[in-house]
Length: 198
Image: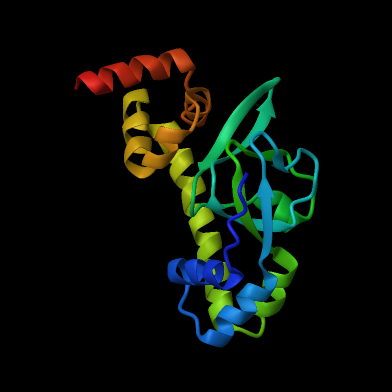
């Protein structure tokens, strides 16, 4: 895996563009809390049972968040370049995570320690806004996924993910997409075939 050598200031700018307006000084504060990490394919970013301490910004790569139910892996989130991922309950209740975050490709991730983020947000309004917007996006993504699997047909679930997450559909293994959509791989294959015909 080749090192990208991206300056932290550029990552801080990416986050600011997406979540908040920031001055030069704000960017320096955000840059000071970013922790660069890289993971190889198959590596656990957050292992089962470990307490979550970070909010992860995926600069490059493909990640999966999942939990184990009745011995089966159930995918709850798939994210690519530009995604933010966290184990919300573990992070805020400071308890062992029941979810696992795994790199499905080599990944470059920038972690924001929750403790440091909250510390600087107390004294910096723009960091506070960024923090709030990140949490809002995580809640909206979670609600969107819950509504998708509760209310939509298998066909519509697949159409929605194609529209909302096209890079994920192109890059993630079908078995994980099927799990995310709460259908079997066989059902997903049938749905994909009929969608291509439509």
